[in-house]
Image (cartoon, rainbow, N blue to C red):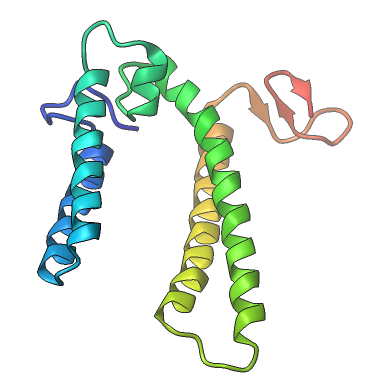
Length: 162
């Protein structure tokens, strides 16, 4: 997870998000779409302002977490809880979008936007599976809180069967 102790002016993820926003701004400007270019420029400025505000020494925890500018392990753990809900929402919305595309298409061939929706659902599911595998592997290999089975055959997490 990104930390604010790096030499970068923002967390790595915020640097990546900012670069994507600037790239989108430039591409839409080159294509002559000045409205979307302006919108992306405003979003870039807002993100930059949010990051600068969150990196202040006296920034509140919620401000740092919302800006993806984690200062310590507590921030990271809290952010993981929030991002879990985001992941569930993203998967749910992607499935709904996929169903809409499937119903709308019928026998027609998918266009680029349809393919993007399909690819998005595929990527989210692959990332979800890989991240779950890594988390479980890490937990089983290094944590005394997770054991494979308890007396009743169920996995034990944190000392109590779930």
